Image: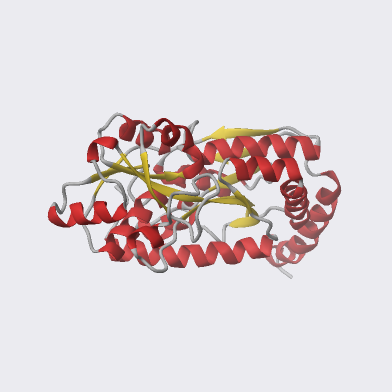
Length: 322
């Protein structure tokens, strides 16, 4: 047997033993939740909430490590190449979208990661500035049809989930809206509030205060059902008559591909315990998030289905990363 063959033969039992040891010991030191966006956006805020939950449950410190840039590609590559089960990727929808948006990315969104758990989903909401003077989505569609290419919307970046949610809406409604990309969710919200754009699609929990104050106007929720936080606001499907329209923000936790199975399962169990606690569940629901109780295998299936769905939207919209 050659040296390489011997190494290959030894690799599995060593990995298996490592997994068994870490099932008992993990986490034995600080864990980093790596976020591909700056502080203040939806993914970052959710990551900080779950860092607190996991720190409490596992008696170990979980911290958020922001590595923004390239729509999450920088953080994803960092975790994929780290080979370190103490560096986890706190991901959102862009993680699976980037595979079709970029001509080439330095990692495989599914293959190079160990899915740990889907954490929560939240509907987006299409909002307008008061100056646009539309009361509902039918008004918006009518205005867009007589003024094609004039109405603008802010997004956290070209190819971001918010951008593609609007592309899906525009395509299904038969209208042309203009995407104005910003570097992240927080800057896109600031731009809309400043009147630099007419519209914004944003994760519902991050914009509740602005809707209540009247600084922005909710036109439609992008989930399949109305949100308890905005019971009087119809879904996009209802308001615009677009059967099948749905665009959800989601948040999930992934480890590097080499992460021991026992460690991933231990984290999944901790997450499920937290999500089932009435106070945690109520806190998430009050902020517009729906807790997602999934196994690691179910999360993998979710990732594959979401990647396939948005790949079609990317292709039909012609969106590319700049």
